Length: 417
Ligand SMILES: *Cc1c(COP(=O)(O)O)cnc(C)c1O
Ligand SMILES: [Zn+2]
Image (cartoon, rainbow, N blue to C red; front, side):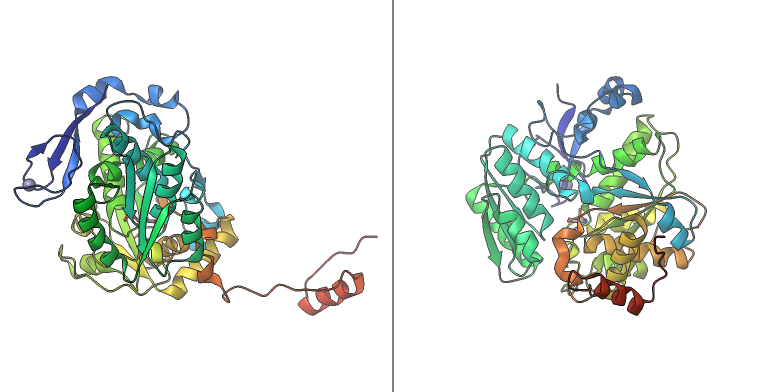
């Protein structure tokens, strides 16, 4: 029943079977899943998709599994929120937030990639599932592995946010904290994958994993009434999500599911870790690795695997890239919460912080449809806000103390009677 043909080198085009490999043996280019699009075109339509259950597998023909999906039957189809209050604050006409802060089960878009990766790993006969993670992937691998009875090994920088560590341990995963940056964790995991033969979702089975991000893009198109936004701002870590959203838009266009493909794609990173943004601004496709220093730990990848392709996606679409400082990230997290009631993690602050600058610079026009990608939940990065929000009042349960409080705060209030 599958529509996947196998893997193909992104650089030299050499074909490979659909195995747990990710690098071309001829040119060392990354491998990508290839599909039988003619067959897919005959199998999907707006109507068929719309009649399916509201989860990411409604686009199953465009995902790299051979049999039935086995993981993530409740993942995806998160809200696309029309953000009228935030639009007003930014002075723009038509603004949407694709809100994966409420993606099931671990409150980030990583449940999409992990659902595909584990479904495929099971097809290939793996029984241990692993990852190198900046936090959200750790949560998702641990939870989804637990739910389908697999053992998981999760490798993280040891100094991640407490909630991200706790939110991995709870599922019974074996967690290994590495004294080093994510890039050092990743290098070690490549060695472990080679030696132990485990499925590392974002290393040796990365080609399948990465395809899961496309569902975020498909949903935006469907939820906008089968059309693409003019502008989309995407947070970048390894740079996979941004390239796959663009791939999703191109696929929908080629399949005739949307009419126009004229979206400009904008990339967002924290100023303390902005190797892709730097490359875009310097007009080069060459990524200069950096040592991350930012509160946006989920995006803290100094040597992004898909950095080169991210630059090509951004510039090829006519978009641009911008970064946000730690202070701008926190201000943006507050703005999003206060205008739309959405508590995003630090990565959401990066997206909105960068979008605000791009709008102010005139790079994103104020009168066209804009989508902001919120990819993770603020409850998971609370440390970033300690000491940054207002105090709350503590009083005894006495009306007079409340009367005093209202007076001190100087708020207008109406009394009954
Ligand atoms: C992993 C992650 C991203 C970016 O992912 P890449 O595909 O590596 O660029 C964005 N937002 C959040 C919250 C993440 O956890
Ligand atoms: Zn090749």
